[in-house]
Image 1 (tube, helix red, strand yellow):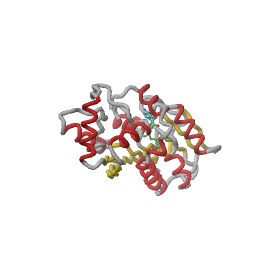
Image 2 (cartoon, rainbow, N blue to C red; image 1 turned 135 degrees about the horizontal axis):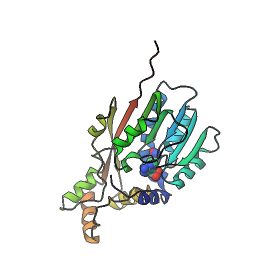
Image 3 (cartoon, rainbow, N blue to C red; image 1 turned 90 degrees about the vertical axis):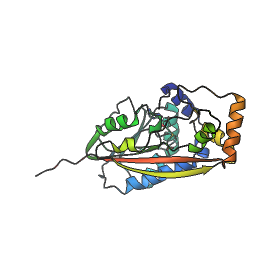
Length: 255
Ligand SMILES: C[S@@+](CC[C@H](N)C(=O)[O-])C[C@H]1O[C@@H](n2cnc3c(N)ncnc32)[C@H](O)[C@@H]1O
């Protein structure tokens, strides 16, 4: 998705109501932590988290006893600080701002690299995953969730019914990730019902996800009211299509 980095960072830095408005993100982080906890990981794990936000995944991993030496990162320094505060003191966690798409983390290689619902903000998430795989130690795992093409299909449909185009980012189809070598890809759908379109838009803004893609021309107030009425006619629901991608770097074979 093409959204300027500074806009993304600003929107998330200002997302003070994130946790109260992110039930799907919480559920997805919990499922991802359970998936990671079931892996055969070394006890002296070197872990890297990308796009930690306020720390849903960071805390779920701690609760699931996925312990080790962690580098926890996010594009937004404010999010890094909130995640750190929410986790509390932990001598085995380091926190640092990092653009997961263009930056390079200190302290690699890693036995585990993970991320929950951050890669949909990258300009080219499949290429970024291929780059991250290069930070894995032999036998290491890269396990992430991101949003797929069907995400917010209802909001797009409300626009389409009126011949309008939404600012909703162009999420990638899950098949784009299946082209990564040895990638295991699975898709789940989570439907969130809002009281009405106002509540839906409020929650999207509260989680910092209201930034439109660069080429979007904003709707007029009358157009927006018509889209919101259409969205409500269709039941005020929004689907999150969650794509989980798992890459495992082969271990070094000894004879
Ligand atoms: C929807 S939140 C998810 C946060 C957390 N992982 C969770 O599950 O609640 C997306 C996070 O990705 C971060 N992000 C967006 N683009 C990023 C990038 N290029 N590199 C690192 N983090 C990024 C945002 O700052 C934000 O904190």
